[in-house]
Image (tube, rainbow, N blue to C red; front, side, top):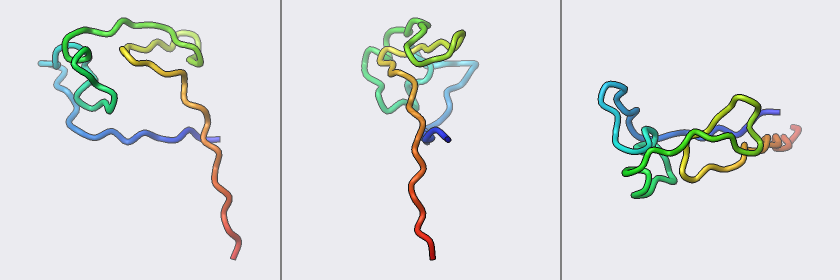
Length: 74
């Protein structure tokens, strides 16, 4: 089973001159004004393996595995 990929748009932030707040916000579809002004805390969320931490103001549980669609036989 494979997870569904999320394709990100936008430019990767500069590691030398990162944006304010959340470093990922320039490419995030959930970004708000809060993301621009506050650094998110690094936390453990349900569904992530031990040692896998998340830094997001709007975290979600780990994505469920994608179920492959049935292919038609010719």
